[in-house]
Length: 298
Image 1 (cartoon, rainbow, N blue to C red):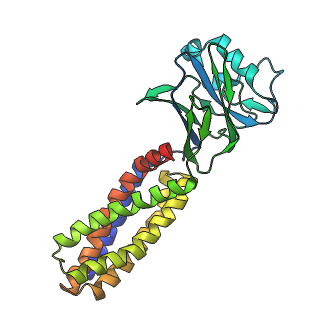
Image 2: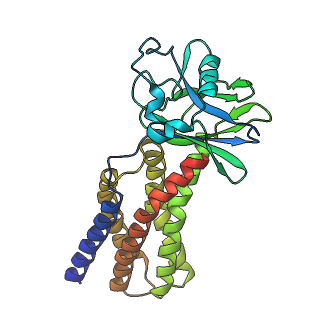
Image 3: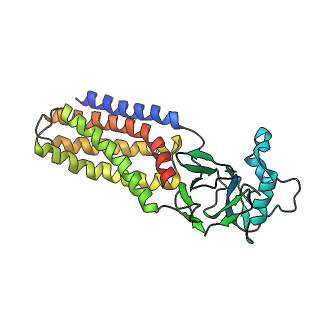
């Protein structure tokens, strides 16, 4: 049993390391997605405004728009509409894509893309401002600037209703709750199915399963909800989760050994290892797409 347990734990670590390697990159970056409802029927540009006057106004060799539109993409821009947007920027602010940022670079989508009845504009990389306004300028010359908004999480979204001329960002609490449940519910489902597969069907066994998982996996879900939304997901950051997963496996192994009395202690310990290996692998596989999905709606 000791040899089998040691091999199972090694399998857990190996499986999680292989999964993490697929996600490894240079790390998550700030991103803000703007969803425009009832977008203008005519051509328009939308950009983010950051606080402070544009510092490169007199630098003829600097073109911030080249960060996002260069080569063949540059030909897609309407210079007249671009100049109209720059002229509509209020005093004390600067357009992060149409003019450029004062610090770290940012890639922005002035034109946007259609997405199920709405139009999406994505702004990403380190130059995405924490405090910002949204500017929208149409081909016919109409311009609109939103109130000041704040980006609460590393990657999030904001909704613009063009018909009402309003912009609103979802509550950060909604994002945290979504991340919490998207982390916890798959774990409960996977480990619950395996519980039945191992022959545990009594009411007491189900209650023990729920109690232990609410303490261990529930606590881990809270941790992920906070860290993922504030710091994002990357292969390197996930490496720090491996010791937590190992600790959870050990805690559940000991808890089930004494509390799951419907079958033998050996079966209870085997269930704990298998359940945590499966939930950890699936969880690490799902965390990146789930994170991006939650960020796009929160």
